Length: 276
Image (tube, rainbow, N blue to C red; front, top):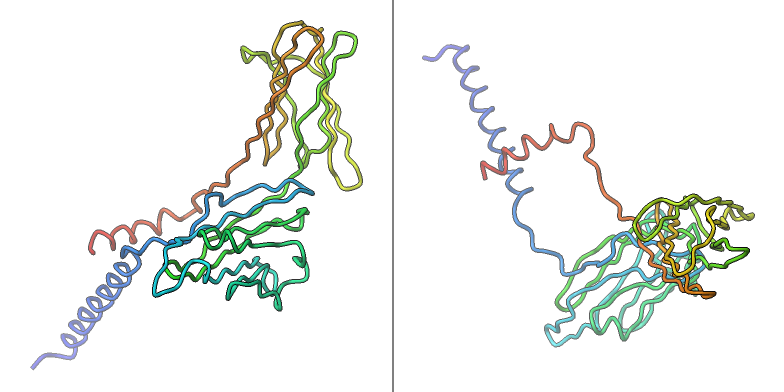
């Protein structure tokens, strides 16, 4: 007959194996292949220009199924931290009884676009308070899922150029957050310039920047204005008394950094994946 000590010993061993098996099963479930969502966005981190309209991209598979078409899709837009919906499109019509008052007459989903698998949301005349995390949920004949769009709001404008007494000046009417300005020539060499920033009651900056060196005719100058969200690069080509400009805007993309200690969590997860 086994002693009490042996019974306890084997009970502990069996318990350890049971717990280990449960952990492995949970890890296998966590790492099991999942069906890719058919609802997606091409721009998860858009930047809206203060006072202008912005489109939050959301797309889904428009294939028909069970006698229904993409036009029969239900599209729900919400914003984290706000009650109600930003916009609800259902039964081929907007359903705005529960719309948050902040978005009344300010948000729009387009039925013709929905019929083609486009559930994008138009926000009109964005303000800084519109920034945040939006969620687009779609239930369609061949699609179902939710995608997140993180809207950032800035102010930016292309500069205009003028020549006075042989010097070149660029003026940009609105920038936010506060920008930095640099000048360079076509070879990439940095040029000296003086820049002044003035902000209005809303905190929007007006940029006035002037090259320190005398203007050279038939030359190309590059003025770069940028902040944490937006970068504008304007090429100014001086030809005689004329100045021709071309501005390109680019926007920052958000990236996630590893949380301290996250690597320690990944070790057992990787082990579980290997055991599966």
